[in-house]
Length: 299
Ligand code: SF4
Ligand code: SF4
Image 1 (cartoon, rainbow, N blue to C red):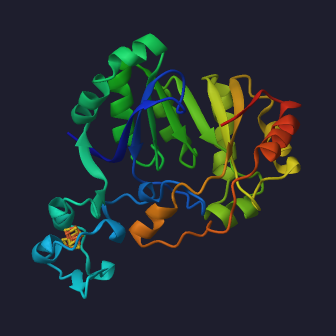
Image 2 (tube, protein in one colour):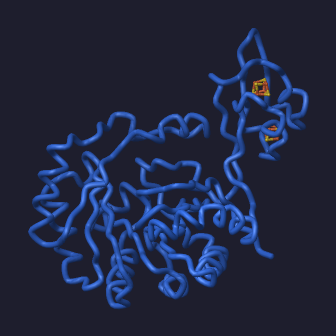
């Protein structure tokens, strides 16, 4: 059976759709938003995350690495990422948690086994299962099978997506999805490309198609300083979605620096290091503007 590359399964999630949910995070995303809080979800491959502050200098990783990618010199641990072939052997023997593998190949049955642990909580709270990432459209065949199994077991299903994919992919997922939570970051294609690495033309077209389908839709806007944190930008997005008859509400999500340590662990540059979380007063002000057109929540 086909496997999916999963980097986290979060139980008792209360911000990823209605009720108490289990959120399955799939690796792979077509965008490269510079503020992304889940950098370990971007690439569709297993990756080594190294947290040097947790290293106790036991030397196990040095002994097992076939590439000599770990050096312990004068009490300092040097990890030579360019030598690493990501076999994961060092993480298996690192009991201190300094070395970890982001991403685990799992079958639908294996994921369902974890999901079923919380079935009673879904039932009492009208919760369910959410696929997130990364973006579940990247591993769409696996996502479809997982959602289909959830539906066949009577579970409510949701996806969190940027919808930057062929419509056929989204339409197929929609057939086994009860709620779509879709990101819109900016309406201007050039600005969108500048901050995410990709134009938004397909995304906006897919948003309109989703509106036509009538399935419950939540539009989420990450509010990023210097990108879209102006009343004009937020109001423009609210205007764009206000005719969507299936829109539940627009959710404004303030930028947070939660992913910063993960960038270091992956050897990636964190380009949002100078940004600050928008203050509550600012978020309220933006929400007031958007409320002229659509129902709004602040996440
Ligand atoms: S196995 Fe872990 S704790 Fe031991 S030296 Fe390697 S990174 Fe450090
Ligand atoms: S993942 Fe494999 S190749 Fe890479 S550092 Fe660890 S043991 Fe060496």
